[in-house]
Length: 263
Image (cartoon, rainbow, N blue to C red; front, side, top):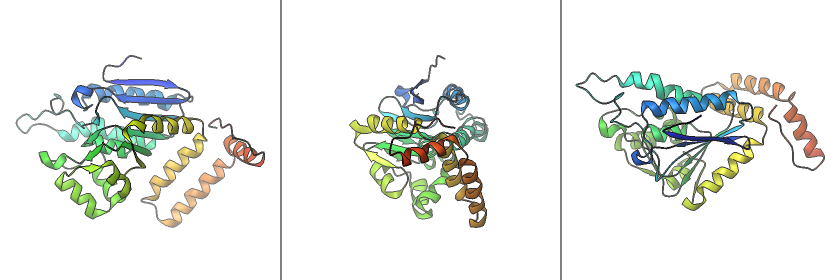
């Protein structure tokens, strides 16, 4: 499958999706949304793909929306930005969160606007130490979207979420790590190797277990304790009957590395 705005490949059980409009800091157009959606459809339906890595080409990860794209260009107050969210960004965030496979994001430069919130929708986020996360919406009179106003206060608290959303002040990679926004800030030269090593490890791991972990942790933000205990019980019951659980226990007993199949 040939793409114009992204790079996409599958190898060794992992898919790698690179936003590829480096001259525009990988900002989104409707065409890019459509190509990302096609790539995610392949990840969803291909049982051989057991992990996904997302990164950006060039010096930036993603600058959010390309404001010159006709789909969102301001035109006398008639622009319906809500329609663009409903058509493209909201489905993208929902798919990344619900994907029953681990999603690793390698932020290689600026992640601004929706670009930052797409990164935060991943399960594990690495960022080069030169990278910055910017909630740039207020600078043009908008509210953080793509889940920004939902995930930020949950991860960093209301005071910090309000500050970064209203001021648009950049957050460094190391600051993002210390605040709990991302998993790890790494030296720029190490970003590719560290994120690739993790995605390869996850692609060989117990996929059903990873999917359950994703769901349990994310639903735990809103579930009352009694309901969440029931969810954990039901998940553990199902996973305890999986081939991967049997393999994990056997490998532990036999003191050898497990060979998971994702089933």
